[in-house]
Length: 163
Length: 103
Image 1 (tube, rainbow over the protein chains, first blue to last red):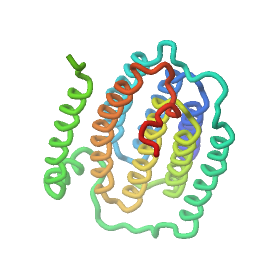
Image 2 (image 1 turned 60 degrees about the horizontal axis):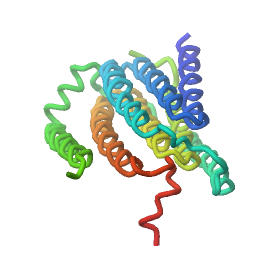
Image 3 (image 1 turned 30 degrees about the vertical axis):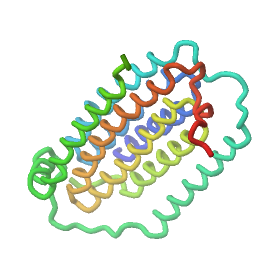
């Protein structure tokens, strides 16, 4: 039962990722990416990572994708990617390269599978993550706030029109 | 909770998504689509981290995913601001036009 659910969600995820790179219109690509992020959130739920599933939907599918759609709306008028591609033969080489990379990673997973191990560990709820964030990972957690502040100031400096 | 689906299925899905993201970055010309493909790759890496974390009954991987999400949010904000600043005055939305820093 759970395997069937997994394969259904995985099919949606792979199909939407393919839709992102196949469709010409970036708005369609953004909507496909929302579907992809949502299905990955569903897989997080299957992996018992409820907090991350919620964070994925709120941060990625909510905040980041809204930003993407805004950028597409600002940039797109009259600038579609059209016409013949001068570098097309070079680009098509990328597909065998991508397939080769996939085979390589899968080979790595098959040849050296991770040994199943069951140390007494924490569950994936918000409590376990919060405990880790405020004990073992306190310093990186605080650094994150500096990073976000730097990004905020940087974006403001970039977006400000020169007078 | 016991995982009913083998952990290698999750990592396999993550590998497939990552390869699709790499192909998207290499094939597409639109900088926004390239950026979205990078998000697909980040998500694939996150999925692998969560899958391994579930396999080893360890929440550290999920903390790392939390940090990756934060950094991705900052990266998207800065990256989109740069893309908008570069392409606002250009006639075409194509990364091939950006050759100013090529020697």
